[in-house]
Image 1 (cartoon, rainbow, N blue to C red):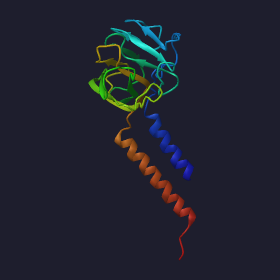
Image 2: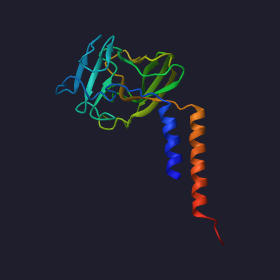
Image 3: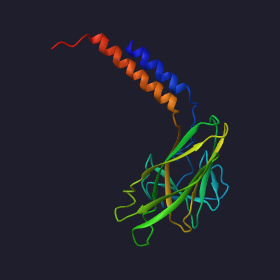
Image 4: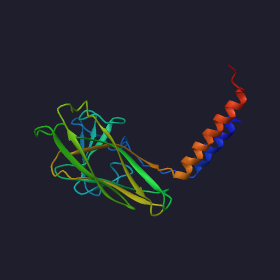
Length: 215
């Protein structure tokens, strides 16, 4: 009884959402990176970083010989010698439902300016406005201790497809470093209520099976 109720309700909540997947969200698939740990990708490049299109004015594709990634061994710096960015068109959304883009953010610790300093970037998606994010580099940040911060951006899908975009606001060769991009649907309140009710029923069933407690 316990397994039947819990499994049925969990399956009901899960099937309400369509699968939405960011292709190459950890940037592990891409062109070869040389000994410097940096491969510069040019504006409108659609092949060097599969799944992503490079925005003006390009990005730097990094591996662990330059800085550590938050997931795997590669990450993207949203600058080259000026601000740049990346975008991806994603399908599988349900119009009117809320979604979260989740991503890890740090900044280039090789920037020589006095610390602390702040790098800034914006995230946007079809159906949502641009939102500003910032990362402050302190004396603790090093190439092997990047201190990534987990961030979330929420938007409401307007249709089956949406374009997501990450763009730096730093106009130099340093700036925001991005990794581990995912998307998840935000459960509707009714779905959460149904799941909570289900776990409550599981508890009642368990107590009945156990029988009365005697002193």
